[in-house]
Image (cartoon, helix red, strand yellow):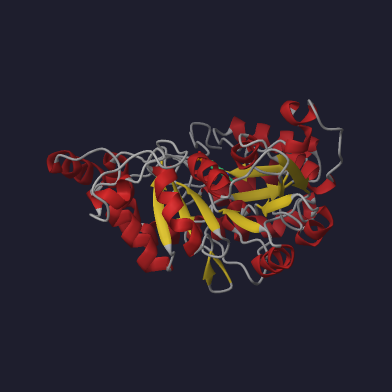
Length: 380
Ligand SMILES: *Cc1c(COP(=O)(O)O)cnc(C)c1O
């Protein structure tokens, strides 16, 4: 039995040209935002995925905050989103004073249960924020239909969903706005980083202003106006061009990165499928309308106790498996002014979802070893 493995749950991958491009950015003499590499990244995304307008940000959290400002979310407005998500999805809208309305997850997938959304819509609902958990699409056809019927905005939290699709539509391109993350735990990284995608032409001009501290500086640099000034609220949402240079090196290797992650994902699936019945845990489900960008490989154990056992037995072998979101309807902040609400599926994922290590340089035999360790030791 190997005892000296050290397998973290994530390891940032350098694809090759990161340092070269960062050095080049320095030599170009412009390292603040909206420089040479920022424009290359914007161009990459608009060409490859047909996004209407892209703005790199310092994080997906920033992109979500920009979205909330852009949609003029105000106190009293209601925003519907899954309870099983990262805090930033909710925080960005709470910062504008919105009332966060949580929706339970699907039984077969941690994404929000689309059939529950319409029941949550009121006269005050302003937006729906689907989260494409693990890069697997929510049913965007159903969500866009509800949004259109009730005149709501849709902001896709596509933090995990780079290079993933709903049918043949790239995620992030379907809602009015899409928000991506390039945090070091995602597929494509720049340390901290993110992007706001604007798909509604009417939101474009104001998005640029909010991005540039509430000024019309972008229009000034395009030569459209002869001086720039304070025209709206905004903040400094731009990443430096050094960050963009790092990101561009990753984007050049996107196909290779995705292919490698998919190989690991498939090995996990193939190794674990034969024992999932015996130990009664579930494997990820990918609806037919969704692609798999191999952002996360997870299992859903049959109890909190079983998850603890798996974490412990893998840890003995030097393998770090982690759980994450605590259903936000039970968070201390939300409970300060909301009653307890039950969200059975979200709570089940809180207790039972376990992420297995998945990163480019994961040794090839880890999925098989994990299956063996579980098979041999979980019953003990
Ligand atoms: C990672 C993540 C975020 C936050 O991204 P940052 O770039 O770290 O701000 C938001 N939502 C979801 C669903 C995420 O997975």
